[in-house]
Length: 167
Image (cartoon, rainbow, N blue to C red; front, side, top):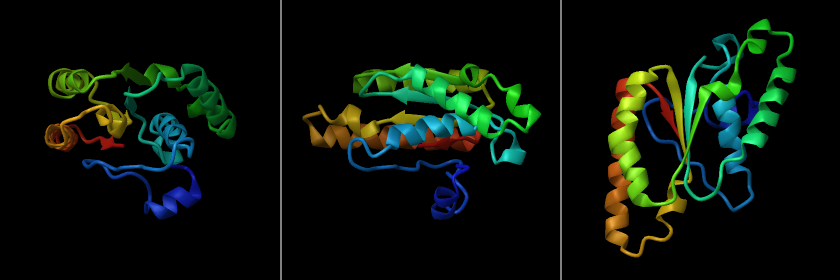
């Protein structure tokens, strides 16, 4: 994470190959944390990064590119003494997708994501912000549970093949 308290709580960060859930009240900073992670994953290994790309799937609000740009500038300033950081084109390494229905999310995870990962094997982080949000409108609880379980299972399967973390 490059945040001492979060690194301590998570014992070094988010695990690769499985789903990590972040939860909290609205406005508690979950999306902010997600945006910071899509930037941190691009850092070189000597700065606790993975020198990789990320996929950010937004499901219940529009992604704030201006905020990400501002955060990237702050990260460059924080690590200004590392020449490698100045070479990173942070916004070029974040693929953003916005979906507002369960069917579009399922199509993306099961149909489009495997091809995306083949073409972008340096992807190290996939964020769904938020998986709970997209299922909020679902009225059939059993189908919601089935769909959510299938999505998580597919993500974990792909993470095992392509070695990325899921948040």
